[in-house]
Amino acid sequence: MTTHKTVDVNVDAMIEDLRTLVETESPSRDHDALAASAKAVAALLDERLGGHAVLVESEAGPHVHWSGGGTPRVLILGHHDTVFPLGTLERRPFTVADGHVTGPGVFDMLGGLVQAVHGLATLDDLSGVEVLVTADEEVGSHSSRALIEERALACGAVLVFEGAADGGGLKTGRKGCGTFQVAIAGRASHAGLEPAAGINALVEAAHQVLEIAALGRPAIGTTVTPTVAAAGTLDNVVPAEATVVVDVRVESADEKERIEAAFAALTPHLDGARITVQGGVGRPPMPESASAELFAVARRLLPGIEGRAVGGGSDGNFTAALGVPTLDGLGAVGGGAHADHEYLVIASMAERAHLVAGLVNAIRDARK
Image (cartoon, rainbow, N blue to C red; front, side, top):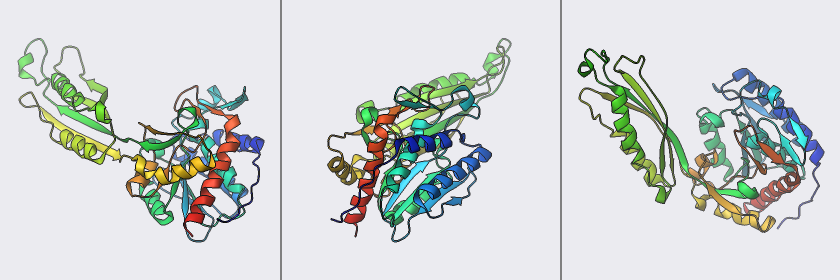
């Protein structure tokens, strides 16, 4: 095995870099904000790692790509968009107190990005390393998926810097996840004078909700959860339209196919009602087998670290589905993703930065 130098990381510098990213607010779908955020990420990469980060324009906003040159061997993957609207920072400013950093996006996933960059900066050689930071992970990765898959296949190994699992564990498996929208068309009529002349889309929706919820198989990890419904216009009108939104999580490709086929086969219960279904399981499952090789390396570097399969999806689902070894949850230790109490644990920042450096070296040594 090649001998690599070990350089300590500066936690104070990491916190200041994190402040810069957090204070450049980056809500998904806000192209102007994401453009500013992408420039901040690119500046961080260039300052800490050298070279020249490239902005890859897309309809969602700019993605950021950086390469250390040479034959691609490992992809560092993250995203710079967050779920918080502009103005959140004013209400919940970047704060360092009591061993925690708080602020919008510190855990999901700006803290992980900063740790990854500082970990890479400890290496004397960055050849074979690529960094891809996308602009639309929180809204489905529609504009970035092709680029993610291209670079994952080129590199052959992927490290994902989403926030750690509970207790600081790595994420070794993820459910496939998706959203379905079920639109129901009926016919309006006066609810008092001639209710029978209408086709009640709300009643049809009630039938469909019960049928859809019964598709779940929790014992094998499949959850099918109706989450949002809307119907009707006035209290004396038989509703002509209704919509139902459904969250789906699956652990296997077979279940993905079963669920998608079941939604496609939905049929009306009321004569004359019509059903239209959109959506699907957009993120395929990430089986634990996809992370086994890299997780074993992580445990050699950091004995005792645990791996957990989780229900949420990430861009690691896409790379794992390609058969590319993928390890997730390498980012910040903390919690409260998407919530007002989101936080990062400062004491874990240096350890996580060194972990990425060790993983990168081990991957490159193994693939020479």
